[in-house]
Length: 131
Image (cartoon, rainbow, N blue to C red; front, side, top):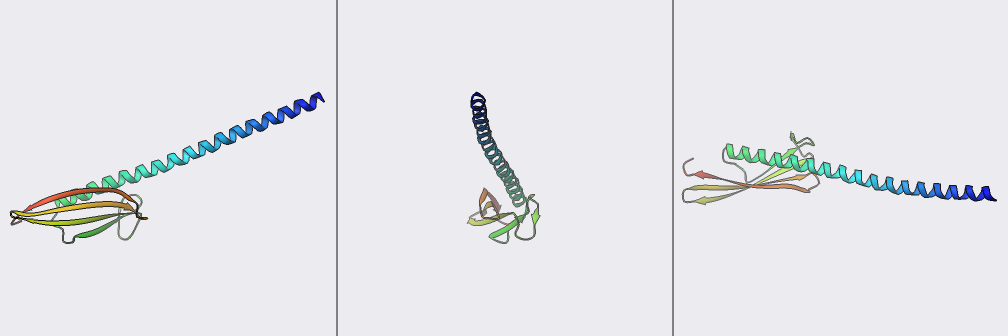
């Protein structure tokens, strides 16, 4: 009888330990999954900021835009792509005529392929009359 009681308490204790470690493992898995998701989101945001800055620099250094609405595409590594890819940049241009020239405002919106907006950058450039 005495041995039976000891064996029973051992199995109860073993079941409690297994249950505790199961809960701890489940919590750890959720933390690792959340960390991985945050890391991916951070990489995407960083790529979007760099791409938006690069586009804004190209606009500042370039000629007047011909079109008011342009869409550029990027692959998963933020390299330019020819067709729809993992990311897109939509550049909206608004032109305002002034007495001494023209003011162009650009809104650069970068998003994922599923449409989730990652980053928006607004910039402007003034073109004096005669340029």
